[in-house]
Image 1 (cartoon, chains in turn brown, purple):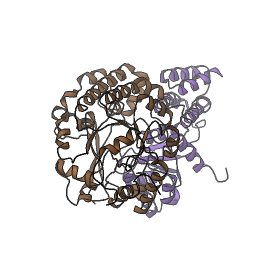
Image 2: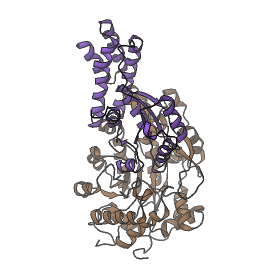
Image 3: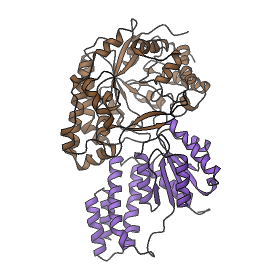
Image 4: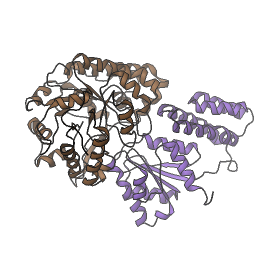
Length: 367
Length: 215
C-alpha cells in the first residue's frame, strides 16, 4: 500500500518534537477498540503478538499501553498484582448495545460523578493505595519483543487530575475545592506521587518512545474547574512529569477532551510537546496551528462525535484530507480521531481515515 | 434593599450558610417569601447562569451556587401561599438515555431549570425510551430533556423521539437535547425541538419553548 513502509517511530518523534516534516504524517491513536482490531485482522486479537500485528498492519509506528493508576481505575486487570483488587468498587457499570460491530449488549464502565469512594479523611486513610512499585512494568518489554525494528511503545497514564475526580466523585471534588481543601490537597499529593513514580519507572525502558499523559480537565464548552485551581493542584505535577521525560529524552504528549483555550499557554509552559485530541466541537485546529503550531505538535481532530461514527467513509476521507491540507504542512501534526477509535466506529470509517493518511500523507503534502 | 442583596450575594457566592442566614434575616425583616424568591433567589441564579455562559464560573462555582439556592428555597417553601407562589413556567422531564451513566451536565441543567422556577422531574441515568414516555405522560410535561455523553448512546435519543411519536405524544411535548457529541445538526436530524451546549443555554431554550407564541 502506498505510504505504508513499516513502522518507524522516528517520524512520530520528529512530528512531536517539531523537527520539520518527517517522511509522512504519522498516524496515532490512544486506544482502538478490541472490536475494531478483531474486525481488521479478521480474527480475535489475543495476546501481545496479535496486538502488535494489528498496529503494524494498520500503519502505526507505535503501540499505546495503559500504565499506572489508569489500570486500576479502568479495571484493566491484566497482571497487575495488588493493584487489581480495587477497580470494581470505584466505577459504575451499565449494559447496552454500544458496538456497531455486534448486536450483543455489552458492559461499559463509567466514572462515579456524584459521591466517590473517598470523600473523607478516614476513607482516604483506609483506601488500599497502590505504590508505583505495585505495577508490572515487564509488560513493556514483553510487548516490545513482538515489535519489528523501528517500532516503539507509548505508555499512557491517566495523569494527575482525573484520578482525583474518579476517586472522590466529580461533584464531591468540585465542592471540596472550596469546602475541604485539605482533603483535596492530600489526594492530589497522593495521586501525583504515585503517577510520577510510575512515570519514572517506565522511562527506564528503552522501548518507550514517548509518553502520553491523558488527563481530562475540560468539556466541550469550558474547563471543568478554574485555571486558578488547575495552576494550584494540577499543572505543577504536569511540569514535574515533563521534566522527567525531558531528562530521559522522551517527548511528552498531553491529552484532554474539551475546550482548553484558556490554559493553552499554561500547557506550553508545563513543557508538553504535543496536544491531543483537539475535539472539533471544542477547538479550531487551524487556529491552533496558526497560534501555537510552533510550540505544540497537534494531534487528532478527526471527529468522533459525527464523522467517524455517523458519517460515510467518503466523509471521513474528505475530513482527513482537509486536515492534512490545513495542518500537516511544515510537520507537527499526527492524524488521529478526536478521542479514540471506539466500538461504535464502523470499520470502513476507521480504514478510510488511515488509508487517506497512507495515500495522501507523504511529504511534501500536495492535496 | 440590603436584605435581598444579601440573599442574592450569598447565592451568587455559593455560600449556603450565608444564604440560609440571609433568607431568615429577610423573612424576619418583614419581606414576604415570594419577594425573596422572585427578587432575590431567581435573579441570582440568572446571574450564575450568565457567569457560566461567559466562562467566569466553572462547574464548582455553579454547583455551590445551586446548593445555596436549594437551601434558601427550602426555607421559603413553607411560607409561600398558593397565591404568591411563582407560577412555574413549565414542567420538564430530564434524563440520560439508555446505556449512558454520565450525569454532571444533566444535573446542572436540572438545578439551573429549578433556579429559573421550572418544575423538574429528573429520571436519572440509563433511562429506556418507555420510561421517558411514561414520565412525560404522568406529569403532562411541557418539555423532555435528553442527555448523552457518547455518540453511540446519543443515537438512542432517536428512539425516544420515535417512542413518543408512536404513542401520539410527540406533538404534546417539546424535546430538547444536550451532551458532548450532540450538535444542532443532530437535533435537527432526529426532529428535536432544540439543542443547548450548556446548562445556562438550556434555561433560555426552555423558556423560549414554553413562551406563548409571538412572545
